[in-house]
Image 1 (cartoon, rainbow, N blue to C red):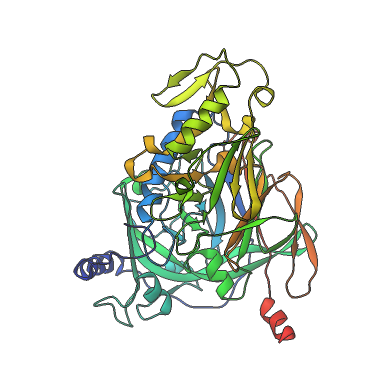
Image 2: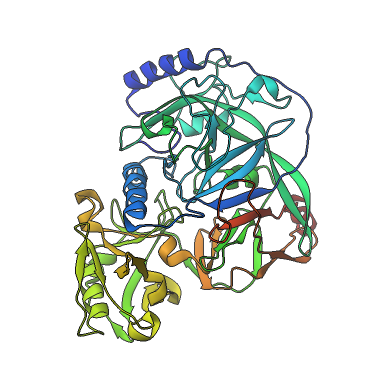
Length: 500
């Protein structure tokens, strides 16, 4: 349980939580005002910039993430909405009028946007990533407003009316995660700043009003001032509470976005809008699933298809295949993992395989891994392929090469049948999410180049380039993955009227 921006389904429990949250947030006051547009660049950076990524660090990231990620599989309204205490990517965004900067985790597996609120006394004020953290103060923004209990947004995220929550009261939220951490507060409405694509490699400032959580109390890892400390989360999940869904509902953008993360040189592309170049083969998203679930149909090692029963690929509760940009490695059910790893290692007969930290298969190898080991190709519905090369699924660790594929069954009983594809297989690929048609697709791509997006009002196609933004903090930019959120604002309501 736990994950959408939803309070528990038990009504007595809901009433109790409602009272607690309102006690926490009763001092938050609303404000009003006009629209203000300023620097709206969302610069996304890789969390491990400037640091050697050990396998234990990556695994710790994924374990903490999956405790929250899979705890929310059955939550209604879609999405987990959970903040990752160990988010892989984080963005600098502007919120409010005048805008203040916030550093939030970027996550396609989460739905709501939330940031720490001024009322949160225990929230961290500084991160070991090198930036000062900011708390949101509703009274300091002329465009900030409270979200009341009778608003449709509040009713949707809470699964209907809350007992004791009346029209003149603030809409509360509470999320409890599988690892015991939680965040609680109220929903507010304010402007988020971003860039609109206005020409080839050109942008102009724009903003859009969204509803997001103002966190008054955090517990567990969320209140720790350590490496994971950030201001909140920027959710790009499937539900109506995600930032992409909210901007699309207000006719600001099409309900489409794409990312291309350059795992070699750093930098990359993250854009919202209709991508027309490169062409991408799409596969259907599995309906009635909260995450980006897809139908995998087969696994190929080199030129050999693995003999795997079709029921291993079935989608459903706590099984099937999930695409998640916030996970570092890639997790496979044991019935896929064992034959896949065996066939990979069989290409080199003299390898002395060691087990590191009890589960990582590692070995010494001095030649080119791309020449010595086979690529792995995953097959999906509609003939979509995901090809992963040896230099992508192998990691160097203390002079050894280690296999990045992980056995889902070794993580927990709940995750044993889940295939979870993370950064290990998604980097150096353009991944396109089309929520209007409920499809997702990808293609191998040079993420340091550019893509083409279409303005839905005029039909004009513009170039959106990759970005490598210099850091103002003590990070080694040679390794930093830094991107720019480039948002193509689609005034497609006018376009729709022209077609009607």
